Length: 412
Image (cartoon, rainbow, N blue to C red; front, side):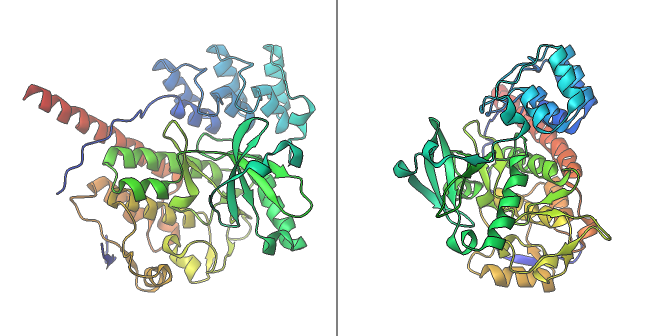
């Protein structure tokens, strides 16, 4: 499909019935400190003890993020104070890791325990090489910085990412990279891939993350092609929630800078998680809240115009990339596949070119959202918090439409 210059502003697919409810909104609201949202979900009948694929509950996330009021509310509603996640951590483990003393006191008063002890106060950063089965590794792909292998760590399948020698052998580059990984290690969110640690090794740099066997969004689109609107919007919400968590990180926002379908993975429950922050930087919000980023950073096909033009940038570069990913989910792949990614980026930067939005593929609300997200003026793009609100409304409308269609079929 050709792109068109932005001057201003079919084939039917059966909707795929997927679980659009569950604990995820409760988890999102708990991590954000949204008391009203948490209350609404619990009043709907959502259990305060429901967990995500990693067995992390709302109490885990609220304790991790320092949301004391949410911790109190969840405990009042019957949340299990000693629920254990996939890594053997309780809410108290998380509260101690991030120095939330008031929450630690509240959890302890309710019988909270910390099975990982001192490790939670000094989060495990290095993993002994003998604990990782690198001899039995299986190559599963190539990442931004090197090969990715499936290995076992303490009996659990995890992804081992090896870093190219050009980075690992350069002391300054290695130090910078390790700082990025240390930042990633502190992140906890249902839509963020969990970083586990760095493997101690004298000759190379290896780090471990959780393994998501369903592969990347790139793999999904390559296999399935165009997604039905309900699925596309559900996936878009997953990505937006993960990115909103990064952008609202304190004390500085985390900008991904290379948000692409390959850097969005799917877990066994069908949820998407954002990964690979090796190209991320903490947005040092000084002066104008921006800093320089070279045009060679990130993937050209998803690159914001200001990045390609070597201009200063902010969090909205990720919003631009997000819009192109959403566009691909509805279309089944990128536009102008025959054209080189750099040529596409050049036309978007200097000719205001954008992918076309045919009405038989894109609902009006999605077209409006995408045009806002890939706006040429960075400050005019919406925040991910606003995007989530818009997508939830779109999702609700599509669900009602799908139910109406099903009812009509039954009547006939």
